[in-house]
Amino acid sequence: MKRVMTVRIAEPKDGLELVEVPEPKPGPGEVLVEMKARPIQPADLLVVRDRHIVKPQLPDPVGIEGSGIIVGHGEGVSSPPIGSRVALPYGGTWAERIVVPATAPIQLPDDCDMAQGAMLALNPVTAWGLTSGLRSGQWLLQNAANSSVGQLVTRMAAARGISTISVVRREGMESMLMGLGADHVLVDGDDLSERVKALTNGKGVDRALDAVAGEATGRLHDATAEGGEVVCYGLLGSDDIILPAVRTIFRDVTLRGFSRLRNLRAMDPQARRVMEAEVIADFKTGMFNAPVLASYPLDEFAEAVTVAEQRGSAGKVLFLSPDLLETA
Image 1 (cartoon, rainbow, N blue to C red):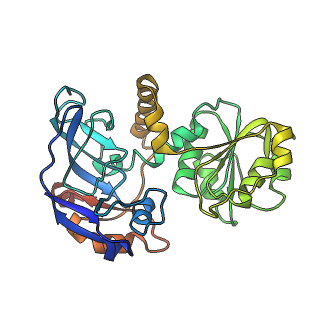
Image 2: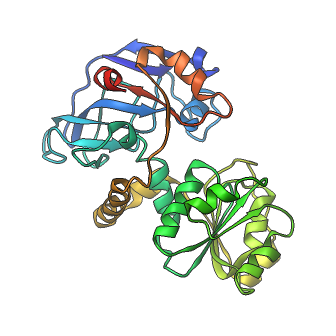
């Protein structure tokens, strides 16, 4: 069986290899998944370069999400049923087949597009977690609003009646983000908190989402209402968070981190079912559909990662199974 592995810390086209590995067999509590589609995500390539919080253990399987079909059960497993289409939130998906815990897959609709299903378990699940708990009428502020996650947050919030203020680094994003449902779009700057409070009757927002870190965290903090929270989930600008301590203490603003994978693993079964039902309902509407730039077989990984890293690429690059490549 073929699998793409990180064999050395290097640029992806040099650090990855397609290798033959033994056929995986599901043990107790596990399922065997025949992979159909796997997107190339930025985090996949950061791991190969050893620039991610997840450190590769060489040789290391690659791929943090994908879609496939359940083709085998381990002892004690009956669900998801054999033949089910599923999305996987982790597991080294750049392979022909993989074994994962039976609790890991998210079951997809029987008639779903497997390429789109392959992109369900990362960004949409992240966006769901970042908006979870907010109610209609509350205010949400986010930076990096033009990112893939930021756009999904805007769509989810609009569908749930949450008012949004989208922060971007430069002008020119307004029409696109307003078209997704953003209520206001602002260019980041030192006076961000004053402009946000002017839009929220002087109160500030109930939750701010920070994908940038550095001084951007402090600007979001100052735009957050008393008793509100700032949620940090990315490091696009810095490895450090710069925050005004005095204003944090006396305004009772909470700062917390968010990790998609940790959030998933911490969910009890009932919370997991609620999340999956809501995400799948939105998936069925086409809310999460993402453009596909190019598709490749696993053995053309070097060209695929090169295309995926081209600046300005409009869409995702995917690895598809042979049967899906024939119809792509």
